[in-house]
Image (cartoon, rainbow, N blue to C red; front, side, top):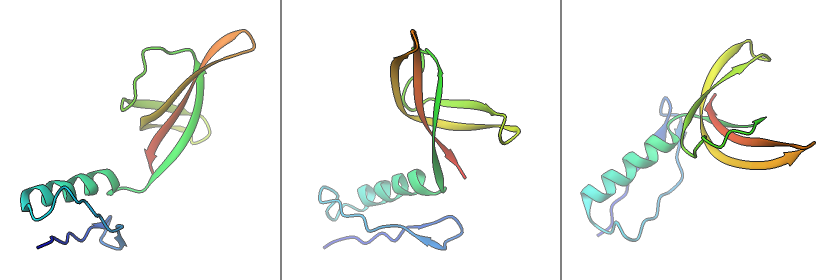
Length: 102
């Protein structure tokens, strides 16, 4: 027996991709948990934004940060999904990839 979980995102107008999870098998609680995780991860449309800042070693993956964006004229929040540190013009900089909702 296999379990089918249909996932629709947002207002129900964006069907999600097919989930194939061999380890779930016919375990209904595991399938429901997997479906919930997929919904949580993809319920909102996201945009990936690259930012550069002075060196900030305290930042961690998964941390939620607030960005004061002068272009938008407002602050927004997003989740850090990538961090890189490098040297540029004799100073250390932190480059962030932040995922924010659209």
